[in-house]
Image 1 (cartoon, one colour):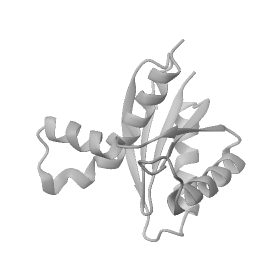
Image 2 (spheres, rainbow, N blue to C red):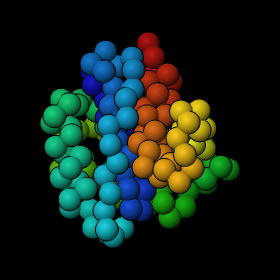
Image 3 (spheres, rainbow, N blue to C red):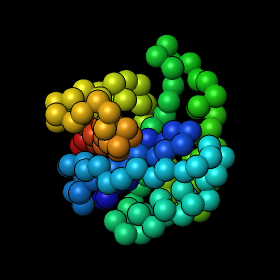
Image 4 (tube, rainbow, N blue to C red):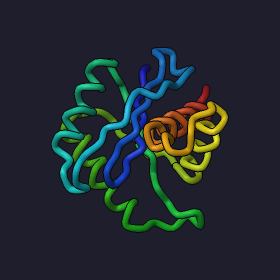
Length: 140
């Protein structure tokens, strides 16, 4: 079963995909948009990636606060999930994404990427971390 993970943000969506066996996660790309409310092209690109990688399930980062409470970002993420599910027909599963961006920055630092270039990678690496967390917590 191939999984696609998304780190949904106000202007970007980091994308990662698993191998067919669900053992490894690889960052794919960052989908960027000009406006937070312009989702049509973002949804179309994700739909293309789902078809290209023959994805069975989508894992969507769930941006709860550190204390577990839900804010505005959770509401927007849920709205995005509904749009994506309607458009693709794929099951959408939420995965707690607390501290994934912090972990992504640590990984980027270990890779030796300059601080001014981090934004080219951070959302994609965060999606990879979300996917790895999901696979680790659902390993059978």
